[in-house]
Image 1 (tube, rainbow, N blue to C red):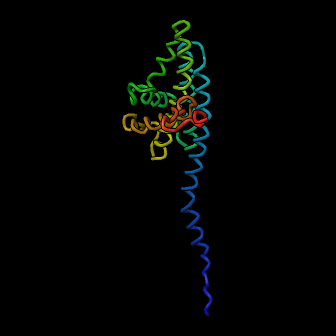
Image 2 (cartoon, one colour):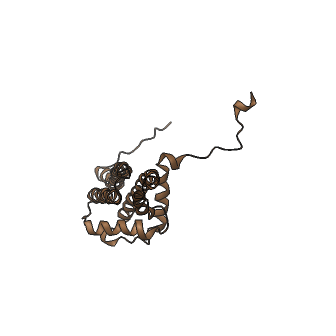
Length: 193
């Protein structure tokens, strides 16, 4: 019975395989680094949402988002401009998702001007909105950079659909929004006793 021989790849063939895999591996590493940055800034934004001073909390959340975009630009080796990044944040939070949770962040911050009730409601809403919005902005921006974009070529209107999906993902990271209502069709075992 003849033995099957396998031919070892030549040095040139082996180098070609490694070179072909390198961009994919680098892209995955960049995505993982960006996910770490987004997660860290998500937590910082949630914490900033608890700042009791109206409008100041909104300014701190915006600062967290700007820092996040600067770090993501660094990961993807893109130049960073504070003005361009602020414009991206404004387009995503204000214009790209009109009427949605993202545009409600400033409103929830201003609720703190209303004594007692406004402050209580704002403390329940603002941290969640700050976290979900920050997460969504990070995810949208990473997707834009991975598709070959830069700070200067960002178009918030084109990213509206993805922003809405990323906002839903961000909400799921918040414990309150992630809970499902109990299923009424499942019988209660304690009731049978």
